[in-house]
Amino acid sequence: MNSASELVLRGEIDVPSLSLTAGASPQLIAAHVSAGGTHDLVVVDGGGRKLHILSKDRNSAEPAVKLAASLDSSAAPIAALPMRLHPHPLSDLMVLVSGRPEPQLLHPNDVVTYVV
Image (cartoon, rainbow, N blue to C red; front, side, top):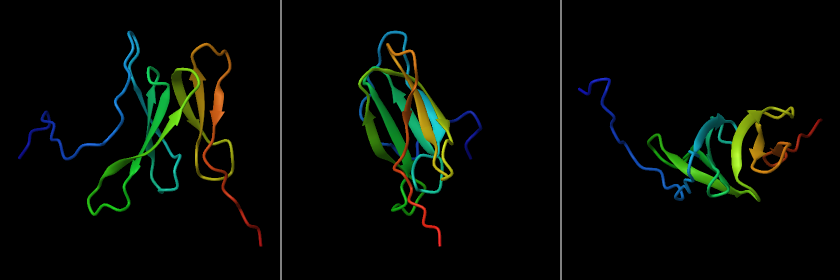
């Protein structure tokens, strides 16, 4: 039996290499941005000017996570905050980028709602 202080590696996630710059470290943010029904993990990679989305792998028999998307940014993202700005259950991401005073809004694909 493992003690509480041990870390057991159960698998690896294939994530593109992160571009670390001096004084900056990647941020991990939990957000519901995919239709998988669970929270996703958003990796803010400022040095690489990307946001990586990690989601639950529904095709795996074991609990597993996969890289769902890598989103390019025109400038280095500094921080991201998930917010529900629409009536659908997916979160939008408010992203602060380097050199811009106002945040940018990234929202998942619009969900079509049919009213009968």
